[in-house]
Image: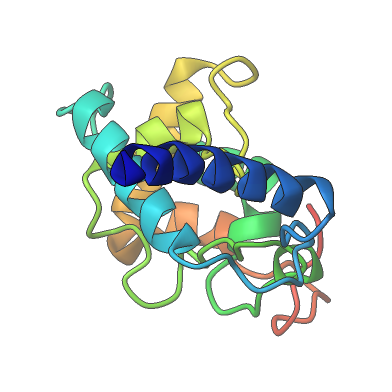
Length: 178
């Protein structure tokens, strides 16, 4: 009997405690707040499982100069303000986000990710990260071109690199919104 009473009380106290935690404004919701325990781990596990389940296994377009150049143009217009450009520091916008968006031209970037994974993330977005879903606002071809360009970012033709380089007179250390 004591076990049953303890179980019922436990089943009531935990949800009520969680409700109080949320209603009293104790949940860290500002971008400057520290993440909750296990927040990053749980979010990453869920994202990886969903991407593995749904991401296309093959690219929807061929890798060629025209697609890489178009991908660079789309990236510059829609992605660079958050994800950066080669040889530049993160923008002020990206520095104010939580979690901070990955700088895709630093380190490995996404050149080691399967192109279908990058396509899925660009098409569907990532909840609670600031990463929007572009599948309703950009044509599918544009999403594939950006994904191909990023997957091949370490071996882009000069024509695509020229699009992604700092503009004349732009401070290469700090990117601005494009």
